[in-house]
Image 1 (cartoon, rainbow, N blue to C red):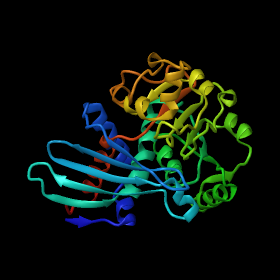
Image 2 (cartoon, helix red, strand yellow):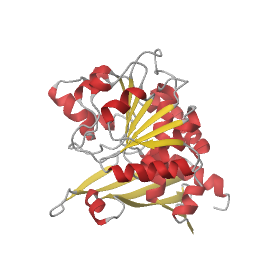
Image 3 (cartoon, rainbow, N blue to C red):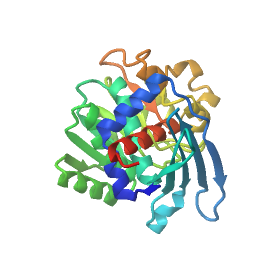
Length: 311
């Protein structure tokens, strides 16, 4: 069994191949068991979460173990930690261990890009990031795989973090700037992607303008939200899988209050990748909510094995 550290895992997951692998798996209709989701109470800080996510095909399988610890931000430590075990489906032999945090960040960004491939305008070039963490740092590169992104603006609850990410993106050749006025920045974007740990809505529906695509990543528990009810009501809604409506406060809460209904959720990645649903015209607002799915992890595991060629 080979063990890939963070850099080796990142090198084995180029976005063009990863996004195409994910597209193929969802288009095939491959299903995965529901992920196991356990709350771990913490003292004096937000509760932590333990996630277990398995998936397999006839040839290869994987299982990811992840811990999400929001309080780590105060300790200057990553909020997400994890590992992904890849195994041979026929024999059960363990093939590889991948860095779970890196794999999660890259497959999450790839899923957002896959959603944008089907839901954003073809000419979308201006990207606004809400959040400046590890996932947010991957998003410009992922979105640029499917759309002609040339401008990136970064907002974060900690302005210094937004500036730090913007500076890194500029060093990589992007037209990138940190912004502090979110209400002003939102109408200027073609794609708005939120990757935060917010528990109260940051994105206000009143700020949205026709033709935009909204990508919501961060809220993965019932008490987390990144966008308000009006944002959901103004947009055509799509999810990565139906699990998003069960687990994420982003949809769970407005469904319970009646702000939206199940019929407002128009499709998932299976329907999108099979071209059964998608963007209607360039004037509508689309919204894609993702909470993650083991099929995405499997797409990353398969991509890594194929890119390495030594497993």
